[in-house]
Length: 431
Figure 1: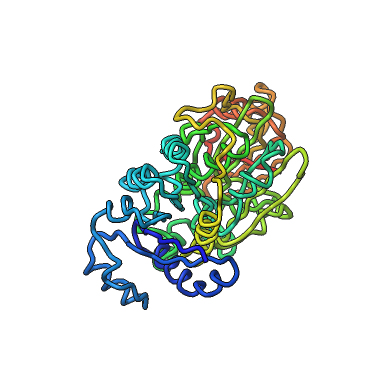
Figure 2: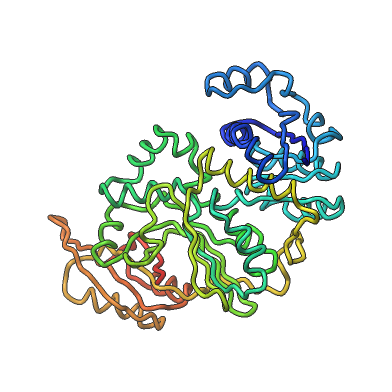
């Protein structure tokens, strides 16, 4: 029987879920894997406050396991595995580095600390001959990190994209199904605990950008930092555009998209229209799904719970078992540096289709002048829909372009005459 002691940095919802799951699975892990795992110390801000919160949640953590001093976890020689549940970049990253420097395996679901400090954390893990595990940092219970880091390591992946933020997917799903505006659905999501009181990390696309930098680095075997990820959130999305898109055969999702063509890499997070029959278009609510295309694996998609204490705890416990049984940690294949891989050429001129909504003066000749602006930039229009607005003499003009360079589309929009039309929305379209 292999006996190991664990230390927790934090014990919020996810940490409590892991503690509960380890207790429930204790006998089964002993029988199945020959592992006896016990939690030795848990770092909390306030012991009394933590005991009160845990009692309300029905989580019975003995007082003697709690500490307010990080070194009781990071430097205790009896602890073999440290699990970080603090969230945010600091002091989580610093504490993880301290644990690694004391030759302890580290497990985290913290995409922010990982994405911003991955090079330092991995370097310290390698120097100490211990492992750094982060399966739950992207996609919750979806095993995408293992798939990219191990199962598809020898493949040539050229596309990874998906729904990697449950909050925005919930909001867009509700807007589509109920025709409600963004602000109203956001308030509902906050009341239900599906969105934070300050939702910027999710709705502005930052959460997805951190996750995409991790996915792209693993998929393309080279460091892709957060700074290389173009980002737009969903705060400007209107129920009107969702409805018009549906009428034209599209469903709106916030996607993280990473593509590689030779040395050219594009990484972007933004609202995206997908054909209604696309597999990702049918992923609703707070679910996550990630689509991968490789030279040998071809198309594959993984779907599951992207958040929540127990789904995330399940992924973390998987990492705990792997760390406990691993004879030699598995490190990513690429040279992990603080800067982007110098062999990559990052582009902001990706090929895309675009949904464009204009508010236009409803009179003869307007359509021709709009079309001329696009033609001058060699942007071909695939379809056009006109919706008359009541009373004010204007019309909504909805355009879907053929695939064109991003910057050509932007230049075409800049050519539009503001005296006859105004840009109301531009949303990219993926097939």
